[in-house]
Length: 72
Image 1 (cartoon, rainbow, N blue to C red):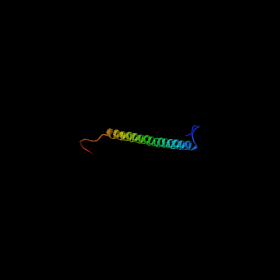
Image 2: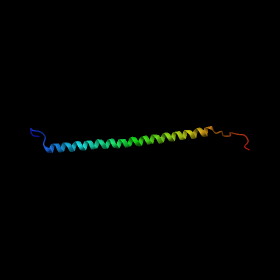
Image 3: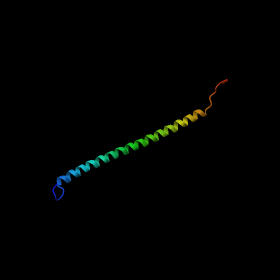
Image 4: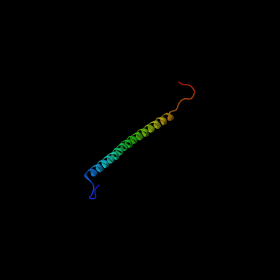
């Protein structure tokens, strides 16, 4: 660097480094956004499955089964 300021090459290299760093950060954010979205859908599916199993368990528990006696 001379006493008058930055050279063109220094500005270009700095811009390139800044661009690569920004691109990396944006890539990480977009990847994490997709992971969060998938996790949300998975949680919804698990909640739905839990509710369905609970309903089935309640229906089976509500039925009365003969425990003895004559069957006609």
